Image (cartoon, rainbow, N blue to C red):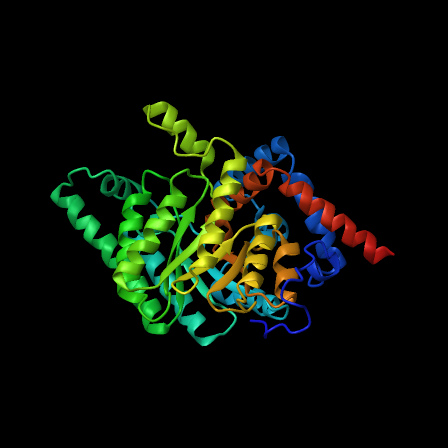
Length: 400
C-alpha cells in the first residue's frame, strides 16, 4: 500500500479526471480493447444478446473460451486461479493499489460439497493475504456457503425442520471457520450483502462474528447497501450495538445491486418496496453514511465501496477536515477491477488507501459474475459513457 502522502496539503483533493495517472498501467492495445468492450456492453441490446450467446456457447462446450478470456474476462477478472490473480495483484501494487481476492464462482444451491469448497477457497485466499502486504482484504458471499432458502427461512423466522436445523448449523460452522481463520491470520474479511429477504440472518451472524473477533481492530466487515431506505438507520444501530458491546464496527458501504429484482418481488408479494424511490435519495443516504463513519472513526473501520466521484471526493474532504491521515488503516476506498480506474489510481497516487476487487475462478463458472458486470455498466446511469469518455481522452492525449 502507498506510503503517507506529503506533497499535497490536506484540503487539496485529488484530480479524478487525470487520465495519465488513471491509465498509466495500460498499454495502448489494452486501452483500445477496453474502449471497444465498454462500447459493446454499453449497448443494452447487444450486451444482453451477446451475454446469453456466450453462456449458451460455454454450456455447449463450443470453442469460445479464448474469445471470452481475451475480452470481458481479462477486463474484469484476475485469472482462473488465485495464482493467476497474484500477477494482477502485483501489477496493481506497483501503482499503490491493493487487491481484494474474490472467489466469484456462484454457490450451487443445495450442493453441500460446493458450499464446503467455497469455504476452503476463501481460507486459501486468507492464507495468501497473510503472506503479502498488497492484499488488505478477502471476501465471500454468504450464499456461497449456504443455500438461498435457508438464509431466507432464518431471516423471516420460519420454523425449521430437524433437517433444516442441521443444515443451518453447518452454515454457521462455515461462517465461523472463515471468520476465525481470518482473525487468527489478522486478515480482514468482507461479508458481502445479499437480497433483502436473506439479509437479516446474514446481519445477525455477522454481528456475532464482529463481537467475537473485532475487539482490538476490525477483522470482520458487514456490507451495507444504501439503495435500501432502512440501511442508514441500520448503520447507526450497528454502531450503537458495537459501542455497547465494546467491539469495533467494520462496514463496507455500497449503493447496492439487485434493485430490479427487489422491486419486482415486492410488487409480486405485496409488501413495501425496500428500495429508495429515486437515485437522489440513495446518494443522500450514502453520503450521510460517509459523514457518520468519519465522525465515529474511533470505533468504525470503513471500506468506501463506490464508483461515484462525488462520494469519493466527499470522503476525502471529510478526512481532511478531521485531520485523518490519507493512509489511515481504518479507511479504504474500493472499486471493481476493470472499472473506474480514474478513481482507484488517482486516489492511490494521492496517498489514500485503495483496493480493487479482483474476482477469479474458471471462465465457465465466473460467467454469471461477468454478465452482472455487463448489466451493471448498461443500467448504471452513465457508467459506460464515463469509461468511454475517459479512455477516449487518454488515447487522444497519448496521440498528442
